[in-house]
Length: 320
Length: 320
Image (cartoon, rainbow over all chains, first blue to last red; front, side, top):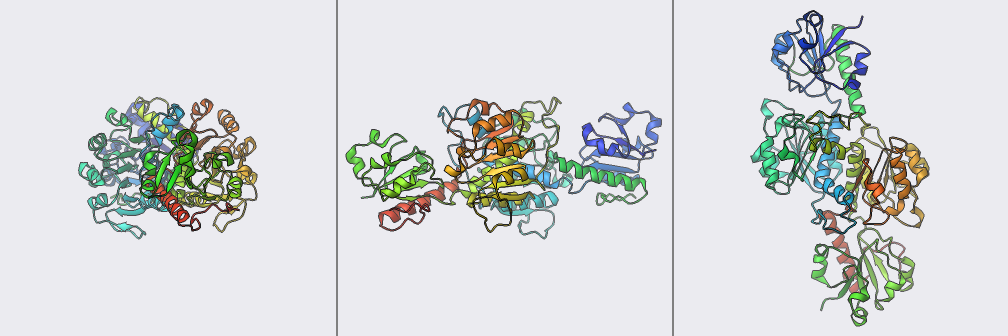
């Protein structure tokens, strides 16, 4: 009989097909587990799959008395109370790097779309305004990529892939992260220094208490009037209100966002702006990225049920 | 007294400011020169600046009896009758490579926007459909870049820059061009072979009789149902009707176009399609690209009036 695995977050069914071939899935559809399954059913569950951003505290863990492993689908685990998991002896796994190329690609896509004003450009053609020789919204040429100063905030696998891609566009690259990495880009000693130096800020830092609202009005202002910010990490890293204000006041030129403070809600003040490109958290949403994330989830679950250490364990999340 | 230069095509005034600081510009605003200037005024003109795609045959040249140099603003010179210029002893110059990075960047921007379905994604957020949990147009994940087979048609300066950028996205790169180049990408012996091999075709070939409608229904079909085509060269290289038919019938997945058969007209059948991204020939439209193109125009004009060979002469366009 296959081992039982609780699906804690709401996932599209297609994402769970391969996992379901190996385990018996108990799908909550994103509802509280107790509403969907009986206490008896839940008593037998030893492992769960969750999206890393869904909040899971100690109380949610205690609903599953035999829970031994929380496996995050994706890189993030910011919704998880790691201390609560550790104190209960629960192992935590994720899919490190599995979606890095896909997320880095959406970051670059957003930066290019914002700086080349792709949405007004497409609309100018599609509306017939170009054919009618109406004034172009693109008249004033913008700076191009060669020599453009791009700062990457965070130098994990995604940050590295963003930097490698943009270096090929002949951009000047620099970064700030907690520690210096062995990468061929200039290291800046602080986020302030990075923002002063760059005109485009790419946010690729892991979400957490230390990065919460790290990109605030002060950082945004330092990017300058031609400045742009791109966020593919988590909405919590930017102070969203300050971003909307800076964009509305033309204190910065534009923004590309794949993540928001309260998903799936993007505030009207943001969606009304012409100088933003907005995607619905699709950074990791490619076929190969899903395949790689599922590989990690399956490997983690198989190891756990075989009594072995997780091959893709979250660092620092060692059961007590 | 500064030398006189006729502005043959219609250019935004801002693009001509630096050139106007060095020469006396006679701006036709894109109208026939004879409508704007007297025969006497035109008799004194020895050089003109034109966009490379504006048609100029022998008759247009003969309006300017002393014409000795036609200087194209940009890389292209497909509108020019080179034989007519040569037989009249008129030198032809262009701005080779000056806009290569800018054009390559729009090519990659279009490819990323099409393959990641950026327009439906932005609309899904902006319309409120995401917040309202309406069905996502992005549900089915698409192939990502790592390992994606991308074919570049043409391996001039723009083709090289496209390939270098996409190699950094971990794509597999191949190309076809009249001759093999010393580049680290697979060479395909024909456009058919390239189309059979790749899923994304990037058109970066110079426009001309030999490339006219080179990308037809047959080539498009070979790209396959997941196939995409991006054109930043000239509209004449694609058979536009066949492209619209292939897109409408989902024989290929999408297209990104910066150029069209009859600019500025993009047919309704094209602009009505959801799986295209359309830009109004803005490939070379960045600050640094314009600056570099103007540098070439000025250097060509200064050399010509000094009686020297053009530093940026069109190859094969040697005055008889």
